[in-house]
Image (cartoon, rainbow, N blue to C red; front, side):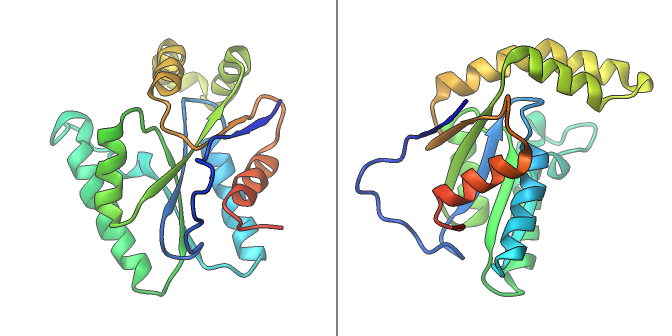
Length: 189
């Protein structure tokens, strides 16, 4: 299974420390959070300053302040990114789900920099197996909610076609996915 580089030919690489955020995009169970952690480890081992954000934690509030807490999420991300940047230049790596251009622009505005996206995909049955392993018996309703929506979100992300790189994680570990991602951006050997 492979990697597809969909960056436009001749596109100039931006400075790896401050000019853009890397966004690990994908449906449920494809390995975004695990890959995010490994990307941080690899950047640390290379001596590159970085910050990590799993966007799920920026909108987990009920009842929603707006549709899907999207505006609250953007406000929270902007505040945390401002705090991280106060410590000096760093590469931001994020993970979550961006399924339309408006959402990508909302993230870019919150971060005051472009968002370059890598979509992680996986075989549907592997995704379901991963989701089943994630939830305990007491989280049955959360598991069912994710299982009911995983095919739809994967199809929506594919149709949106917003990502410059697509990596099939079906048979790859999160460290290899992180290595491929960072190599794409010129951040590893």
